[in-house]
Amino acid sequence: MSIDKIVSLCKRRGFVFQSSEIYGGFGAIYDYGPLGITLKNNISQLWWRDMTQLHENIVGLDSGILMHPKIWEASGHVGAFNDPLVDCKECKSRYRADDLVEKDNKNTEWIKIQCPKCGTTGKLTEPRQFNLMFKTNIGPIEDDSNIAFLRPETAQGIYVNYLLTQNALRLKVPFGIAQIGKAFRNEIVARNFIFRTREFEQMEMQYFVKPGEDDKSLNEWKQKRISFYDQLGLNSSKLRFHEHGKNELAHYAKEAWDIEFEFPFGWSEIEGIHNRTDFDLVQHEKFSGKKMEVFDQQKNERFLPYIIETSAGLNRILLAVLSDAYWEDKDNDRLVMKFHPKIAPVTAVVCPLVKKDGLPEIGRKVMDLLKPHFITIYDQQGSIGKRYYRQDEAGTPFGITIDHQTGEDNSVTLRHRDNQQQDRVDIDQLVKAINDSMENY
Picture 1: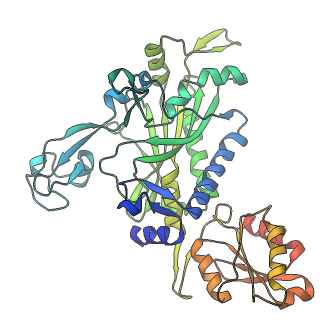
Picture 2 (picture 1 turned 180 degrees about the vertical axis):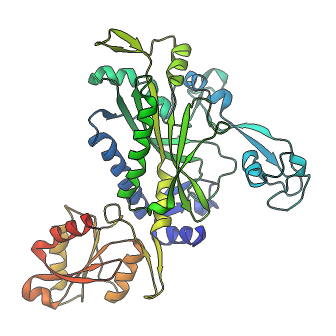
Picture 3 (picture 1 turned 120 degrees about the vertical axis):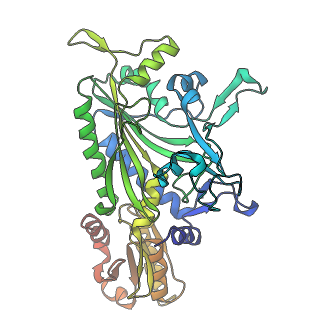
């Protein structure tokens, strides 16, 4: 299965659109249609519940996209947030230098590496650094005195607010702060649909621990985070850990692991778990002149916590869910998106068998019964088979048919998307039957 099939389905069924398509598109920016935004929200809400509702010592935050420019100096982004880029003099293509080195392990001299597009050798430029942050200006006058940046990550908004949060809620170490929000990176080589884009969403949780307890905490969060993907219904055989080698570690990291997913284009990262030590807090102390220590009343001492970071890419997880769910059921000549019912954009479709004999009226009553519990749609256009297959392609797990027997015994047909099994269910038991099926999926 190629990524092109996912792209085609997403456009056709309203999951993802190319941004500004009527103007020819806007590179590496995407809009999320009715099914896409619901699926994305379902994933993020599940993550938010898992972090803030199920953990008593993790709270939420929503920091600004625009923050003081000194923050990005302290974090190292202004000086170090660069990608080395090379250009092909022959075909004018541009590449990330580290990607080319990874693909061509035999050669490290640029003059010997082959251009992936035109195949020429000896035509690549030497690597040049390119800053990935988007610049903007605050106020009416554009000059160097009011430069700001669109945040390239959400983590720094947590660090500069962590003491305010701790004091407001009287939190004791260890505690965590979770945040879901937009981030922006001026990617030059954006690729693979919504995997690498210039505008994206992160789901991050920063966990503050005592120095010396960081290694244990990292291992605990590795297991917690990998188990989260079971809730999304992702195939466990397509998930794995990748440990960063010494030459891969970011400047702030003591230890780092990626959770990788096997996409149609290969294994790639969807989440990182990092031991950031106290690097960020030390930097913000230095640049702000404000103390960033917490106070331990029992030991009567102040210290800078170490930080265990879990950073997940919401757009990448969405693409993983789309890739994993895509199924061509050749035996029945249908395309099915096998979303887990808990995250499917639409839970159920209500279909009166015909547009007469009072069946549409009963269908509307069933809609009123289901809407408070599930996202439900109504469909009475076309044959019942075509209606089912339309919803299979959208990933709707349950189809409910109102037929002539419904008027006799108050029962409906409940169809299950994956195996097309049909059960006869009393209308009064419909909510329970759907909930039970979701729990046992």
